Image 1: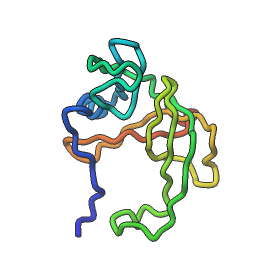
Image 2: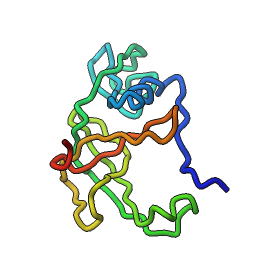
Image 3: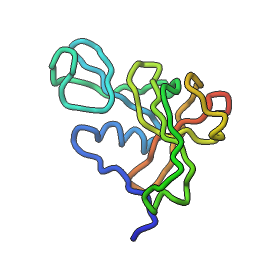
Image 4: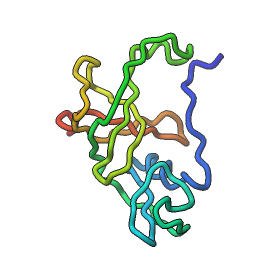
Length: 138
């Protein structure tokens, strides 16, 4: 069994998101028809059903919307990281993103905490967006 965490496999619909992450930019889709921003990436706008969109650079700022602390049991590859958090953050642009909050003790994590994106290069192909409390980002 591998000790590497499973990593996402980019595809046609989400390649712009993962390309941005590799460049340490948080990118989200914006519909060219109605202007709504969306995440996760998908081919059709959920608002107006248009297929035309562009990738825009998000601010990278968000608010913790929800979270849980995972203690276990968990998959063996994640056991060394336990306890760890899994959080849902709401980007300032509106969409939600599932992530982890880093550089924040579990007892300090709260709903409503302002966070900023940081990036973890996990392979040559994939960089993951994580978030840390906004006051600790320099």
